[in-house]
Image 1 (cartoon, rainbow, N blue to C red):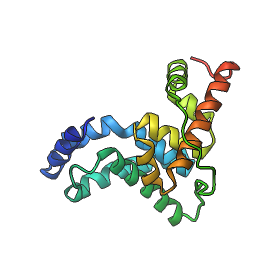
Image 2 (cartoon, rainbow, N blue to C red):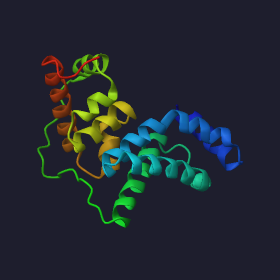
Image 3 (cartoon, helix red, strand yellow):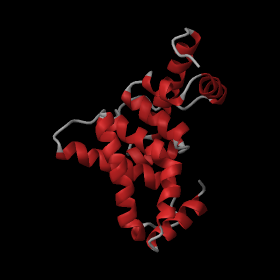
Image 4 (tube, rainbow, N blue to C red):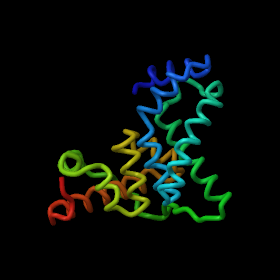
Length: 182
């Protein structure tokens, strides 16, 4: 979904048209669920919170500012909803370490293509630790740039890049060892 399509769908939501919400739901429900699941660690809670997010989008659509990047908007909204849930329920969430190396991201496009073409996205995510899973999901699943992920999570871009590169290397290693299948 492009920014223009998202903006048009939100405009329809503001007018009370449910098809606008359905379009956004169809395009982002899986990604929203993965972001939330990566934080709350409970499939049941993630399902409920995913539904809550789309209800909240329906209720707050008039507050959306078009042209500010809808993927980041949805991701931040998902993350905040999950973190609020954890705070209300007294559970701890994982946090990405700010003091990790600011190693620059090497060219991983070939690795990404190998990994993406040889396993399902869910299998790949399950093979990673929570911080890596969230970053890979945001970059590959939601197609956010590393800079957008950095801004969304409030951590240095180098840390995001390092975690992403480490995750891709882990997936490549698991694939070569035959632990991930088609």
